[in-house]
Image 1 (tube, rainbow, N blue to C red):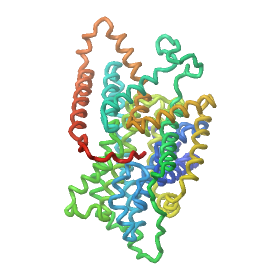
Image 2: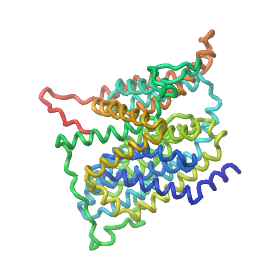
Image 3: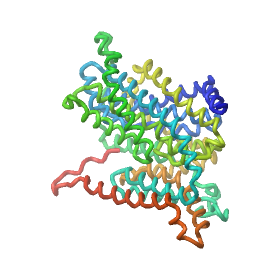
Image 4: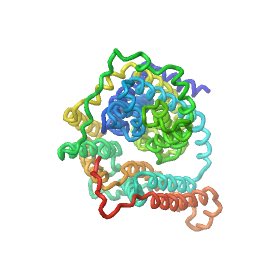
Length: 513
């Protein structure tokens, strides 16, 4: 109890509250700009946390993640152009409300339901993570290797449209994690004689290149080729509109409460499973609300319940994603994979031992997450008009600023120009991965898990070298091995069923970033 109270008191310092508020503000601001998203902002911001305390650093990044998830709904509602993919179904009912002059009402419902879903999943995280870590501590190397293999399979299968491409990306990411010193012999491997690679490929410059800089390259290409869609200018909401069109009443929120709770449950369940992500959660929440509604035909015409369903579901993923990260050391999403880099940069190794070795930090993070929800609520409420203006900022202004931030972030990571070079290389890699429909999210998660997975496999080989049949005495290994095979079969079968069939004269749609 003393550790818990100490962690909570650490989070409630003015400095940490300030970092959380700045992170939330930055997240909403980035998320509101079409084409940018929370994970991109987190990747660029990680190097900025180098001189912060571990709690301030993680709290700042979590604030960005929470703010970015809500920020994506701003452009989805105002311009019918989701700022981030998980807000796609928010536009179904948000944009029709804007055309009816109820844009502020739509934005506020998105905010309220987003915060509600966030709070729900955070409570689940607080209550589930520690007991799950205790169970994980009783698992040996073989069990952990089996769990990691199953997680990589799930991530690879559910990220992108192709199971094969997902597996290739995951395996390639895990393979690149082996660059550096061999964990047994301490001999350099795959370094190609480059001394800077002895410590391995730095994850922060790599993620900045894959996420941020490659996306900027795609957007610049789209602009140069004249394929950028006209998203229009921001709509300024008139003060002459009736008050009820500019606010969400308690009765309106209460009428959506059942939907919010349902979507929060869906988002939490989705977030706790590695690899599914907020995009799927948003669509599942929206679909469940439509099926449960007495008037499903009203969805898509400007129904507040549709906004609440999507935003509660995709926001609930944020807290739930940290359950496998903190309890098992397995990142449940792209954002969680980037957070691993922040933890390692501050000397903290996510996994079941984190509750024993850094218990005060963990409970400080829990308190910071709870604080971030209410700060998100406050900043979102008071800054609605400012964030609405961001959707009309020209890309010609945004892109140069982002490139500068990317270079500065990579440079600050250490190894200076080498880190910048790594970022540039992976920006090109990310560009072609997007073009060829390879999941960079799967690649990064594979990279983050690769070192721990290799260590578990090597330890298992040493333990069972002379008696491999002893593996059959470990039911958890057999269970996850069977689940891995079944998951591969099931995902492959599902994807083959839903694969689109083109007629010979069908036109190929334009490739968009």
